[in-house]
Length: 182
Image (cartoon, rainbow, N blue to C red):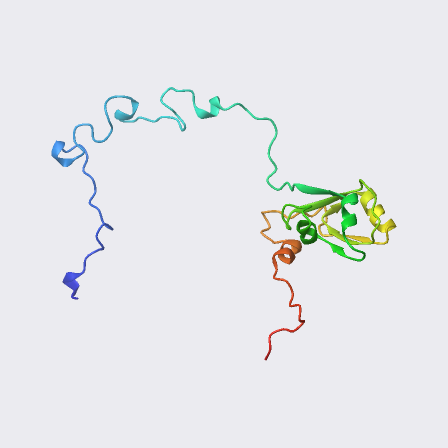
């Protein structure tokens, strides 16, 4: 290939359109502005959102009260009475609750409420627990571990993944206890 054979890739360079230079030029007569109307005259300046005289979308849409919190968490509610299915000294977390069908997904936020009676000592790892639920677990001989400080929530702004999501999505540990052999 020689210097005089170099040329741009086909379609990467286009010639400028010469408007108003006759019908054979392709943009003659009205120069692409259409027939009459506000857009056909020079100096036309329509407001943003102008819809040709139709009531604009901003005025057609009714004003809504309040706002939607983008960082709100919906908590799946589990009552203490449902936790009697677990054996003594078992760890109850999102994965365990999801396997029994008490949660839709193991990574859901969980709040435990105090309805019912707990007869089994368990370790409860949830995001929130009511005072009655905490008292019922401790009265049965177990304890509650909160996975999230209610004051410090996981937000999309920080782009950090909570520990409970990483733990729930991590592969299960090797049952043999051995790691990679050298």
